[in-house]
Length: 97
Image 1 (cartoon, rainbow, N blue to C red):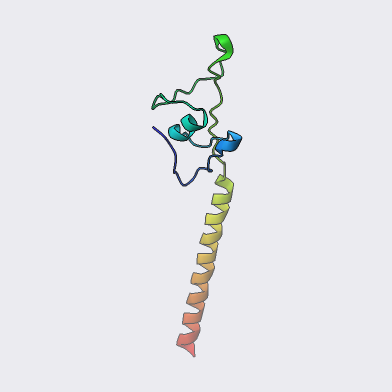
Image 2: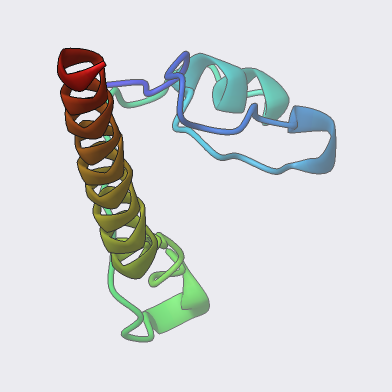
């Protein structure tokens, strides 16, 4: 269940051991592993006996851009309204003149 090749993820940097996607083949190659499982288990941050596996490392954060989206859509609506009023005004001028 590798996750490599998705467009919204940063590129992995194996030389710095920075992994932004779960690319099983690349991680196995970097760690010289030959027999790897084809799945991942995400553990919570509860301490484990012997310290491994280390849990709580998976971070899922979504940006909260709702205010920016709302401002954008209200601005687009306002611009559409102004453009519509401008077109109506110009149409009335054309009919009079």
